[in-house]
Image 1: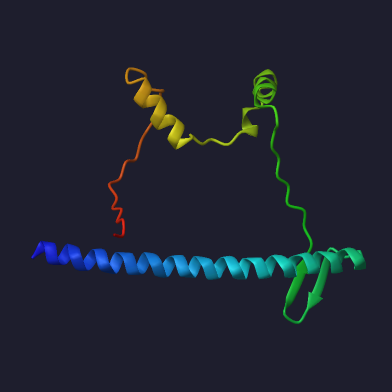
Image 2: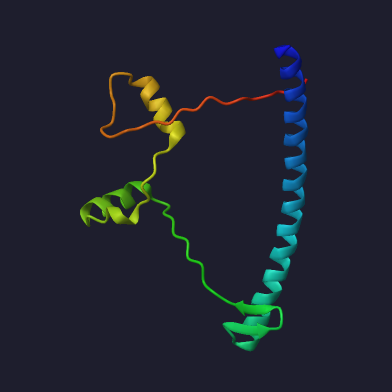
Length: 126
């Protein structure tokens, strides 16, 4: 009986996964359309010298999203350390690198390190 349940559940799982992929594809198309409209709206704001434009459908706001990165990590880390500017970094561990580090160094355990390891299911369609 559990083989039948597993068979049916695998079938439903694959159908749902494929439906989600289709939705994601549609979402990518919609995002591309929004990107085109966004560029046009930015151009309108630029032409009008406006940061906001009121319409009956909503207020258009032109904002500056800032994103920073470095092309020289070694120098950047030295700068962070020298200026005690650790708040410039995000508190996040690279999962793949940590897993590899722990595998290669089974006797080393970084202080305070915690792990949340959950079993999961992967179904490969034949």
